[in-house]
Length: 263
Length: 89
Image 1 (cartoon, each protein chain N blue to C red):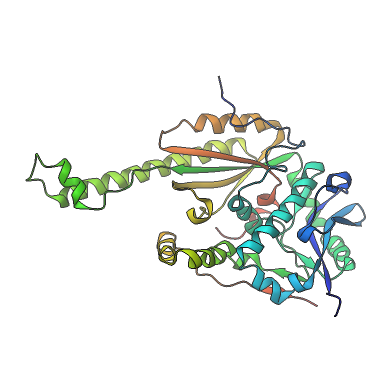
Image 2: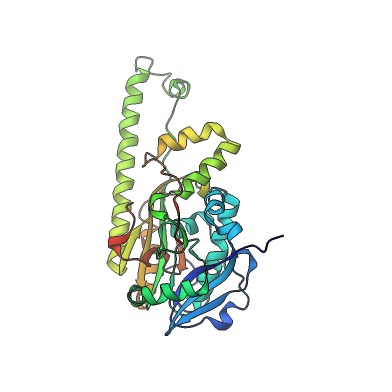
């Protein structure tokens, strides 16, 4: 049997080897985490089989939610441990090179880009804020309305339905404006912010309507201010809920705004 | 008196997300749209791909076929362009 061809999976780039921080963390597939260094720039890597991360395999595997989850979690475990030790720029999921030399070349060629990214995130932490609106379920059938309106048989169902729709529309507008105000307030504290797409309820398991899914890069000196603001904004409206996540390694801010993919 | 949202971690010390199992959906937001995209020898072109939806479609199709239309209708978006895998030798 042929020995599987191996590649090098790169998790992130730092200026310091994570050392002991990696001892308890396995990489993708449980492989040991290693470092590749070029003049003080350190890539955090582990070996992967190209039978799993080669072109065809990758295309197939990325559509497998189980594979995607285990790979994403392994990627995150390494990045998170490294970022907890030293400022680390996360790389995109499944960045794979054919050899350690190719990684060294990338470190050398991209030195300026990595330096800029490291400078941008130094002393700052990413926080996630998700905002949900729990609006009443619209009435869908005539039965319920008729029960309420027995005393006024002259009122048509259609008219009531129209009023109800206007009320629902108004409620939606109001919570969206609330989401904008929440975002504005948090942007005043954060160094920068990036919007993510609303999450799919099938993946999040959330029943509420997601009206904001944002990541904020916050100066570490303003962490308390940011959290206090999130807490204060949580009480804005009874039907609006905020969820704070983090601290995150600065995944959402590893690249400059200009190169972000369109939302 | 402010009620803390969560215990305030020191930014450099292990905090809630450090080592804690985070929600997959929050992680995928970041891993699929974030990170420096450098050209690996084998790398996926994240910009063209909405992997969550691809995986989600597979997931939903396998358990609740009637839901996928609702998801589609609810969230008008760019059509899926497929997973683009590039291999430079």
